[in-house]
Image (cartoon, rainbow, N blue to C red; front, side):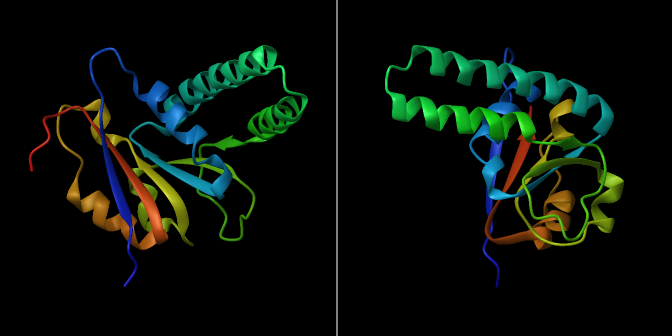
Length: 159
């Protein structure tokens, strides 16, 4: 049985979906292909790409404040990898191995092939309800063992 981790992230009033998504993605983008499920993939693509560029600027600011030469070389490599990260509003190919971010709609979940380390479900973030258990169960088979499913929502957490 594959064990997956489900992380629920509640958006509070001043926190935008793309801000939180880009900062969370910063910690996970090196693990290979990432899939984001959204109601409007092309709109999210444009907003997320812009927010990703802001994260790159924060990393560059860290570079300019750093005195250690070794740390500067590490940061240069991170910035180069972040700038090369492709954001695509389409289904990922089954043989994709390099890190990339694919944004798909809920209707395309059934067409997914392969397994991924990180999947974000953002559909409930645009509404006021909790993440859909139907979408969660549809996405779990597409996660590797110990993969992470991140669900965004704006409603109250009921335990």
